[in-house]
Amino acid sequence: MFRLKLHWQILIALAFAVLLGALAGTEHALFGIRYYDVFNFIGTLFLNALKMIIVPLIISSIIVGIAGVGGTQGLGRLGGKTILYYFTTSLVSILTGLLFVNLFAPGIVDGRPAKEFLGLNAEQALIAAEKVGDHGAGDIADVFLSMVPPNIVQAAANGQMLGLIFFSLLFGYFMTRIPKAMADNQHVFWQGIYHTMMKITDFVMKFAPLGVFGLVAKVIAGIKPEQLGELASSLGMFFITVLLALATHVLISLPLLLRFIARVNPWRQYSAMAPAMLTAFSTASSSATLPLTIECVEKNAGVSNRTSSFVLPLGATVNMDGTALYECVAAMFIAQAYGLELGLVTQFTIVLVALLTSIGVAGIPAASLVAITIILGTIGLPLEALGLILAVDRILDMFRTSVNVFSDSVGAVIIARLEGEQGILQTT
Ligand code: ASP
Image 1 (cartoon, rainbow, N blue to C red):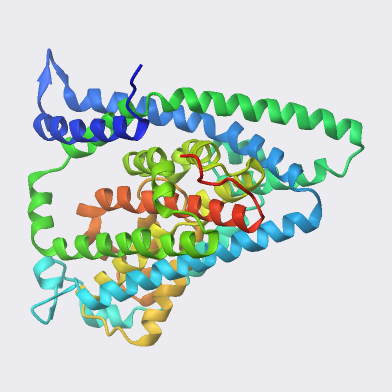
Image 2 (cartoon, rainbow, N blue to C red; image 1 turned 45 degrees about the horizontal axis):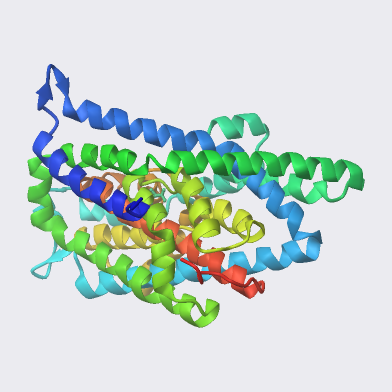
């Protein structure tokens, strides 16, 4: 029987979501039940289902993958390539953002800082006087502390992915250092869990169109007319700057890497990853999307579990190109809007802190906002300035999260190819 491909189903659901969400708003109701609540219910159910899968999927996937890498050397090589990829693409992404925000200067209207138009009134003198806070340093150190969780059950319960990943990496590695009979047993056990989790992911994915509908309809229904007004005026330029920079990264920089390093056709990558990218768009969470990212990378792109289980869970928390770019553009925009002198040193600081914080932020909605406050603190801007961008943050979050997920998947493909894997992206 003819069946529409999943990404088309999701796209159609998206279109319906925009239409019905806009019509329903937050107030319309049927028999006393608000449509908004119905959207919320459907969306939350889907999100919960995705989150439910994460902990056992990550743990089993990493353990199976790492135990299969075989020895310190293989792991070191894989780790080295992965970190190099994360670092390079995040940096390229931030620099793209920096270029666009300097070109378009969205925080400057008619040659004057846009602060006045945007209704903020913190005194410039006060801003200049504000010292480079120790705020930034403390928060970044916390990220590294959370990598070694004192209690893994608590880490799992609180969604501290880095801690879980670190523990699972150790577990997978040392599993290969125990007597063979015991190790073999465990291997079969964890593999069984991993395959079961993938089957559950398959099942949940069938509901993606419905879930996406609920999530997006809720966002659209919740948009207030004033927000549209703001978007049309002062924030419009900021919005466009972010979108253009993100598009450049996804449509030019990453495809170039795919073409010249992985030697695969970028179009195939888009097609393989479409369900995951659309889910990332609707959930605005790379962590919640992780099960689908793994599924698409392994089943559609053909990357081995050995590579994907290492690159993807780590990437979902550590490699956030879209987020890093957004942090840079947002901080620069706010600095421009406040009339801050944006010399080379300030810009370099923004790039550096954006890079570091993008590693630390969790893959959850609006996580960038925390990172942006760190940047603002570091360059001496008041934290309230964040209020400037809140009106458009959610929509931009959807776009940047898709970019985050796409970059992780490109990393998996590139590293798999560098590891000599064959047959990647040949059969989608
Ligand atoms: N929502 C993003 C993610 O999950 C993080 C952020 O930029 O806020 O990837």
